[in-house]
Image (cartoon, rainbow, N blue to C red):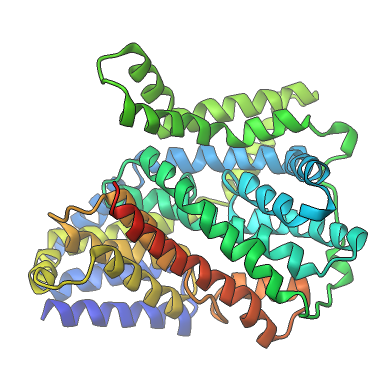
Length: 438
């Protein structure tokens, strides 16, 4: 009976989002309440479970995502992303231009949300294409693949950060494993795959011509731009390295784990960015505060969706449904990594939204993996990889890519959808390989 209730809840979730275009936040809350009542929870228990799930999931997560959004806003407004692009292209040269764009997408994609990074960087691809006369998809796919990988694999992006909380995974270690996994994934789905797309015709609309956020003379230096963008990664990676190599009672361990704790790492990085990308450029604090306020507006709905996903997970836990499902699957030989990936992939194909698919999948999978010896950080990455599978017509990313490059539906499937699917499968394979050594 609980299994039937969950399946019904997922079908209702799909209908509410796809058929009735209801906000995923509202749809997830409705389904969480409905599933709770459907499995026999008292009314007051359902409400308490929903409240506990929202609060427990957001918690310090709101700080991480909020600080990350503000840092991303500074990087976008200051022109630091453009400076990074120009510097890398100059360093790599035309012969390795793909690798320069891939690295740009990776560096800029870590602190900036996918859509913002796409809209900001893709016009630069058009400018490079016009200068070099190289096929646009040959140039664009490495950059977009890097943006996609950072969106699906790496904290402080919302989905991997939120599901790390759901799986009780260490965020710094998740970032470290994610970086290891991201390298081969981006290379294969980016420069290597892009070589097969050189004959696809593009028809870029005139309105998508390159636009500069800040005049070149006002942009921060290349070194400062990269250091500011990578500051959260450097701090959290240092903490993860300390946990793997240092004794807990050493002063260096305590310092590195303190500054690399995700909230502290993002706060320190934001303060550093306020100085390097704001004050040092002659901006006043009111001007900087306006940039930060605008940046935080973009994550308000994301935070609500994450909270609603936590509510759904909590209802499954408090109702005992998770234990019920665990009993059903306890003798299965399917790896929890494949199970989490598969649930996320199915939801991604049905729902379109990678974030909603990842959060919902984590809520369903979390009770099933209790007692598993799989590292929770790898479960985060497997779920994130599954949430990127087979992006198609119900995903806004599909249409964004299609319209910007003036592609046919067929060619969008051939390029964008296949690229996302390659990222997803390589991500899963990488998780299975890492599971053998960690």
